[in-house]
Image 1 (cartoon, rainbow, N blue to C red):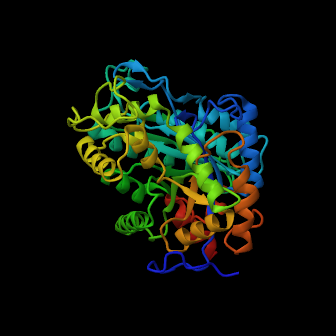
Image 2 (tube, rainbow, N blue to C red):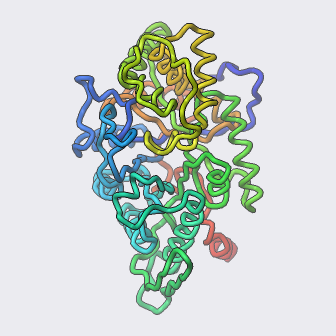
Length: 463
């Protein structure tokens, strides 16, 4: 079966590329419709079990968990409009590793409030115990309200966050490389290297205790979108979790930029896989899909949530405004956002966002709530299973992405339609695996050896 050319102006450059899926269990957000009777607990192990078993049945590459070290706040008060449910990711994934056999396990862990020796050991332990399925989503959480949890005399200067991340990752790699490649079989023969690292940020002296997993190192994910974040990903990451999953032209531009940076970092241009976050809504007919998508969008954005989102951009409490009325007539009172609503909005220039929103609202005669629904509606795919499959294939085969990290709009049942209806359409078109062909996450993603082990891997291959 051939795929209809739905974007004839964008050439297919990778005609045999396969679609890859991960699932992002967010735990903190307003896009999970937690108030619906069908919604399950966000912290009950049964919920995580249902989601990951469905994902593994659908041959997903990875189960991805975010991190939340402190409840979200907005202008000094707890933000109580989102679902809240984020137990420690490594602890959750260790439990989920025991009930799964193939799917990758991605833990978001920050580099600002963790010590490198301890974090590297915990991640490597998950990697070993899962048989080579662990990944580390490297984030640089450095906002003051999270830093207040740790009483460290303030928080890391924003300009230094990637310096610390790089140092943390360098130490972790030394620890992971301390054991030989043969799965730790030489652990007691005197070949385990001592790790010594002394710098302005770290003071490490240790003899590592955990051998190497079948995939060598935990896979490195990275989600920063700033120029500094993209450079960090290009130099270090195996996978970049991007925000560029709404508009194909934007995704292509992002991919080209990441690949240029990857080559500049001395790596093959396809060394970093690109997985944007997205949502998928399917229906029995185009009209059914449209109606379902409309229901989802309106239930994701309550009137209070709409006012909160716009208030975050304007930098002030807009709860007294009418959500069915127009945007504030005045400009935002802040230039850039902090991390109050999460890392996805950090650094956004508020007046640029406000100007874009105002133009959209005026052009389409949108109220505050309609505007927020309209804006969020651009993030994802909707349609009949066949048309959604064709769109996903096009995104992958034009080189815009390598796969998608799907955020279900409801848990634990939010992957059912995708696994039962979209995956078979992809498989019918030869664009999705029909079984796991490897056992490690590195194999699922088609990744090369860890960056610091490539010389050793080449030597072994040549022997």
